[in-house]
Amino acid sequence: MRIPFTKKELRIFSLTDMDRAMDLMINGRQSATGVNVNSNTAMNCVPYLAGVRLISETIGQLPLIEYQRVQPRGKERADQRILYRLLHDSPNPEMSAITFKETLQGHAITWGNAFAEIQWHPDGYPEALWPLRPDRMQVGRDEVTKEIIYAYRLPDGTTAKLPAYRVFHIPGFGFDGLIGYDTIYLAREAIGMALAMEEYGARFFGNGANPGGVLEHPNKLSAASQDNLRKSWNEMHQGLSNQHRIAILEEGMQYKQVGIPPDNAQFLESRKFQLNEIARLLHIPPHMLA
Image 1 (cartoon, rainbow, N blue to C red):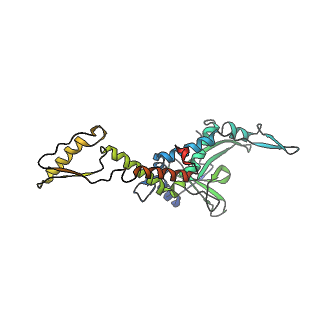
Image 2: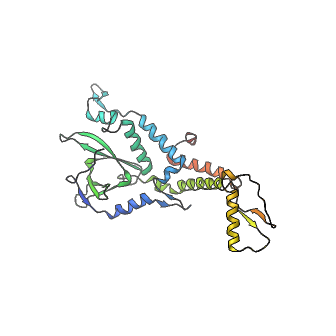
């Protein structure tokens, strides 16, 4: 893939605000459930991943056709133009049009913005489009010229200032018309809740479908005896492969379950509700997420 920028074309500078934004995107913002939610962890949420794929793959299959006006009051495909080839056939030597559209649509859903570098030919026409990661991009205005600029974090850690004519930008919903809101940041609680319930369900079955309990002994046990008893109990009964084993309690011990079974806590109903929340976030009918 072509390296988007060269030292000759750019001014390299430090951007404190971008450092903070990058830290937020990489590490995420902790939701009330305690789960960190960012662009990577959100993809572990199956309903969200399914919705993003559904929209992106659908848009990727749609043809992007450039037309030109013809007289009288008609139109025809402008298939002789260079831009038609970039949008309809292949935006660059390494990607098909379907892959390019899927990628940018996925970026727009996840980060609220989609960016691509416009590679200009010396004669003044665009010859390629290269996707840029939104989590490496910061949009602002030049302090002197007041023109829109794009600050892009390069792989070597430096930040490059890119003029607006070099960037193809599709902003999502936002109030300033310049940049779209980060969807995952706004919906972090709904996504975090879905991730937390999925982790709870996994741990529930990992514990042999017993969320917790107490072994009562009629006598007082030393700390070492408690640790040995807990270890031996977990080895015998924890995990899916150890389910339904018969427990033999000696010396008057009794087992009392203190955890709340998922069916009593309406666990499945809660997971279905979160699926509806994700569908609502992505404007998808719930049945399309299966």
